[in-house]
Length: 384
Image (tube, rainbow, N blue to C red; front, side, top):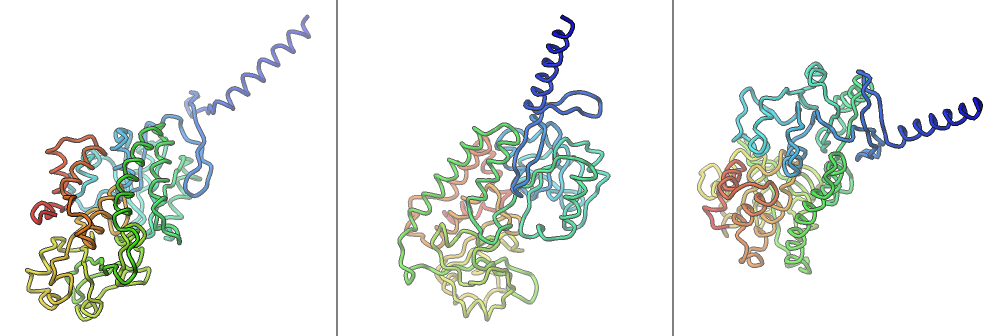
């Protein structure tokens, strides 16, 4: 009998251990059991994370903040890096700060440009770090060092969400993959699916209207950030920065066919002579009327785009070309800039208000306020 009891107890113990392993239970420093789950991040790395993360630190330029606000889980953020710039940021400085103003008071752990504050990271006591990678920081030594410290020294689970620019093959699907991954992290798969379906609907509409246009009928476009120095501005090349996906989705011919950003003089811009000019988010003067009204750009007034009134602006929809949840807006502005006759029934200004209301669950007045923060009130003024 005693032998039988021992066998039964041993069997029960094995079952308990197996159940603990299968259910993903880990023991915290305080001895308390915490449920975990495993996910694969966009590095292809298997990560064990809390089943219900409660204290999240983000390294981000807006994609993570916007997605968490859209999922209604922004209050899980306890510190950030990359979002806060300047000594006294205000909500009206950026759409991400406006969407989640509490982030201004949270600890700032730094960024790959400028360096990290590891003491602030440790004091935030996170149970998870979310890192949004971009083409501008992915290959930096400080990025590699910071990721290594977070995972191997601080022993904090690190989930990396790559932006499209992190890959040689720049694909729009990468945006959706990032949203899906955050849905899995927070158990918000249903909301992630809803968001993606809504965005795909907008992208399909743009793609359908600009499809099947012969190469010799495609308008040329220039994506440029106006500068205050001797050059006129920095031009985004083919499928790079703010110009990402414009050829794939909008059927636009980028006048600068290199995959890079380059400063150009007025002579170079006149030579390229684009049919449409789209002012980008690295522009010191994002109002589209500037090229017609400002004497500093008088030399460009005979360029096709300026002469025909085909100058528009992306306002502050990206952070130096890092696409966030506003990519349908960027592509719609681009498409209507190139093909105004194909979008006469769509006022992008009104479309944008509806997009923000559905995405972030905000009111009419809040949607108009957000548009102002993004430097897009020009659309109302120009009936765009």
